[in-house]
Image 1 (spheres, rainbow, N blue to C red):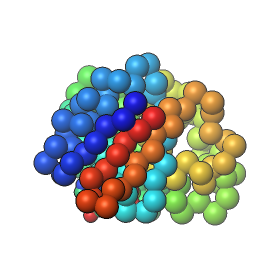
Image 2 (image 1 turned 135 degrees about the vertical axis):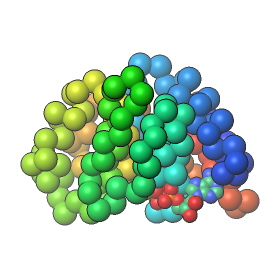
Image 3 (image 1 turned 180 degrees about the vertical axis):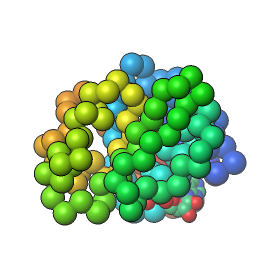
Length: 136
Ligand SMILES: Nc1ncnc2c1ncn2[C@@H]1O[C@H](COP(=O)(O)OP(=O)(O)O)[C@@H](O)[C@H]1O
Ligand SMILES: [Mg+2]
């Protein structure tokens, strides 16, 4: 499945379309280079889901929690600064992943084979014209 974000004006519409296609998947990883737009797209998804607290880059805090209007939580991980995968176990990775809440993961490659196999692996590519291609 593929989605094109032509520019930031259309990102919420794309996020809505994306959400309608992920089925029952709760754990979603985003593979993309630095600056490709992982945080920005996750923020757009959170907006569509009614999150009102600002979803800024969680780069310095590894996991951020956002509240949905229905009381459910969203977990947003950024593993960029992990020194080693085991650090994720120290803060209770699987308690988050097994919670049944939506989990969005930036830099999933940093936790290597600790990722469960029920992850929807999404990639983001930047085209020459700066459009983003989201695919899974
Ligand atoms: N779809 C997009 N179209 C244009 N610019 C974007 C898009 N997504 C992100 N950007 C811009 O790219 C920069 C990096 O985005 P960010 O989401 O922080 O990337 P990442 O989390 O992948 O490192 C930001 O300045 C952001 O505004
Ligand atoms: Mg980011």
